[in-house]
Image (cartoon, rainbow, N blue to C red; front, side, top):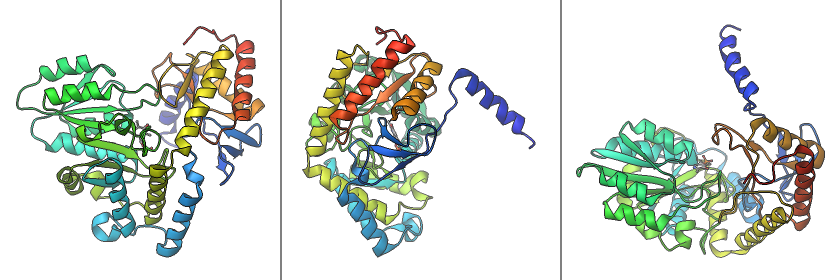
Length: 403
Ligand SMILES: *Cc1c(COP(=O)(O)O)cnc(C)c1O
């Protein structure tokens, strides 16, 4: 077809670099996660080691029942934007649940975490007077796109470095509205931000704080409110953003904060206003998931146990991984082709699914396999994974000292 050569040239380049993305076609079976059916090459049943359904809530009976019952009661779609016929009782109830989770006055739902970051940051940056967004150097693509779309001044500060942030805030004009955007758990290295020090700096300079807790909600804090809840810092943060799609096992995104700020975003954010609302059944399921994780620590405790076990066994096997305080275990391969090959062999020969993480998700030369153990991985699953990696490490001559 005309123009295909233009597309193909770029795809060929990706393939040469080893960065072409290949999806695994997998079928999750309710009740047997993290074992799933593989429709591609290799074993029929594979164990998933890279899911963001971190706690298995996507198949929790309370969550499944809530969705099924709500679909039966209310049908499938929301029927419109929130303004035109799309606000359901389940949306309102879920927003109340989220505001309560984070100890904030109000919450606003979006169709995904990506959209919530994009819409909130672009609206804050474009509407607030003399806005300047100060963005951590390793922020997620959704935040970067939101900041780009805001078309306001932006400053990148060194990753997790409050002193650099302090210097950069000090250099801004007095009349600037300063917005500091960062994450709690960074999902590629699994490191956690020094939130308290960052908030000290924000308060010193009168800056708003915007935190993405996407990889923490459900999993950290006594009620699953995230790292800021765990550290008793939620009330010092202007805006907390999260997802319903990862540990909560559904789909959707949200922001929480003051009633005035949430009303401002509700009234001005294009990415909220002009799109069909989440299906009410999704909202009902997400609310059930949040409510469960607010009062149950069993999933979080079991996740912590299995994360510690996998780390210890990798250490014993001499397989280097990034040491971090989170639930994410990155094993560095540092080569895109090798990273993809290892992932293929694990899938084909061992029934283990872990997607290679290559550029542009991470910088070139830092390619990795990223393992996320959860409460539903058994000790036998962990032993099988470590023994497979041990064999491959011997075969593939991957340096043991590369962490
Ligand atoms: C996944 C992710 C998002 C987007 O959330 P979705 O609900 O998947 O769209 C936002 N921020 C970070 C840091 C993420 O990893």
